[in-house]
Each structure stands twice: as C-alpha cells, then as structure tokens.
Image 1 (spheres, one colour):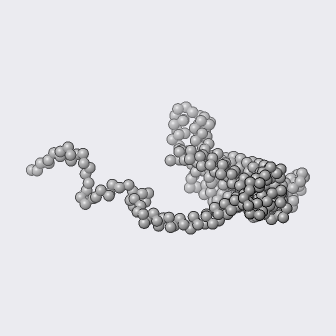
Image 2 (tube, helix red, strand yellow):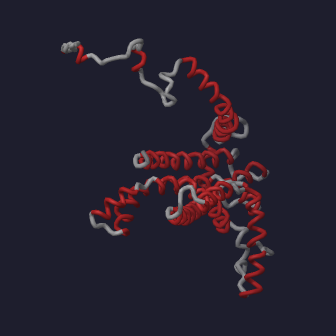
Image 3 (cartoon, helix red, strand yellow):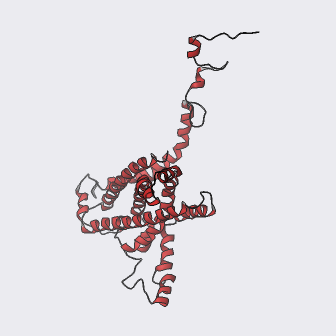
Length: 320
C-alpha cells in the first residue's frame, strides 16, 4: 500500500506545469492563436498593406493636397490669401447652400426610410430568404449611382419618362408643370435619396441586430410595455448608430458629382461649381477658385467625419 505525500506550501503556490512545457507557453497569444507576432511577421503584414496605402496616397492624399494648396497661390505662382475672398461671392455661397440643403434633406429622408426598413426586417429570420434578398439588393443599389442613375431617373420622371406620361394620361397630373423637376438643384434630392436608403440599410442593420433579446425580456418582466421599451431602452441605444449613419449619408451626398453633372448643366452645388471653375475661362474675381472651394468642402467633410467617429465609438460600446 502506497501513501501520498502532502505537498508543502511552496508547491501549492507554484502553478503546476506539464513536463516539457516552458515559460513561453504562458505568453499572450494573438487573435489567430499563434502567439505574439514576430517582427518578421509584422513586416510581412505591412508589406501586404502597401498596395492599398500606395493607392490611397496616389489617388486621394496627393490630389487632395494639391487641390487645396492651389487655392493659396495666385495665377503667377506666388503665395496669397486673396483667393479666400471667393467665400464672399454670392454665387459661391449659393453653391454651398445648395449642397448643404440637398445633402441634408436626402440624408434625413434616407435615414428615416432606411431605419423603418431595418425595423421591419427585424421580424424576419437573419438567414432567411427575404433578409438575404434585401441585403443583396441594398449592396447593389448603394453603388448604383453616377450617370447610370441619372439616366434611369430621366427615363422614369423626365419630360418623357414613363411615370410622367402615365400620370399625365391617367390622372392629368404633370409633375413638371412648375418647371423641370429633375433638372434643378432641389430635384437632386430624389436620386440622392434613392441611393441613400440602401446605404442606410447596410450601415444601420448591424446596430438593429445588436439589440439583445434579453433587454426586451427584462423590460417586460419589470412591467414595461413594448412602446416604453423602444422609447426608453432601444432608441437611446440605437441613437449613436442612427446619427452616425445619418452623417455618413450626408457626407456621401455632399461629395456626389456624376449624377448631378448628368442632370444639371450649370453649377448650383459645390462639386459642379468646382468643375465650372476648372473648365470655364470665366474667373469669378479671383484665381484658383476651385482650390478654395475644395478647401471648403474638405473642412466640412473633416467636421462631419470627426462627429461620425465619435458617434461610432459610442455605438460600439453596445455592440461588444
């Protein structure tokens, strides 16, 4: 008969390690479970990131810097602040007002309608047919912009669009009775809202899916009604994600160019005014006005992206 020896206090305090294990087995492991990444592995990771970084540098960063910097040089190439006088020009101010109005209205409409669609989809299965179809269609329509979208709306609600002709022949209602609906700045709200709705579904649906069923069950257990649950629990949780998506829609509409260029021949919004300044031989009082307008757009986009980042950081707290 064998007897087990009682371990002393030192043996109890020291962690028991299997034979052959080393101290490195307790080192932190990365997300792939392969242990701490070596300098060589990090260098390979950065090498894979290089093509994207080069693309962003060549086609986004450098052109943006050149465009903005051109606003601080005169026609002779000397540095000047005189170009900033363009912001006092009524035509320039009207272009910024038009861009802000169209972007804000289309973003609000897209956010509200898209949020309602997301709310309706909550009642369907996550992997069901309807949810899959809506996700696929939203992914396509969110990228359906530019000249193709403009021609699609011309064929629909233009002067000879099939919806225009049908309304006129059936109800005697002419949507262009007060002038061309689609060929003026307020008319841009229609196509801009069209591609804002699917973008809202794609960005806001993950936040809606993040609502935990246990929150609703806990509220119901405490006697809360469904309306009280949405007003006091769900909506405050979803508010950062909603307003973050709203800012994203605003930025997307504010920087859109091709659709407006296909519908409007003149300025009225900032991107078209920049094009007008670059292609027209008429200078509105100062040189390099396009660079000054690019600076104004960049400032607005930086402010929007700053608040978008803050809201996304707050929304991420509830998605962990």
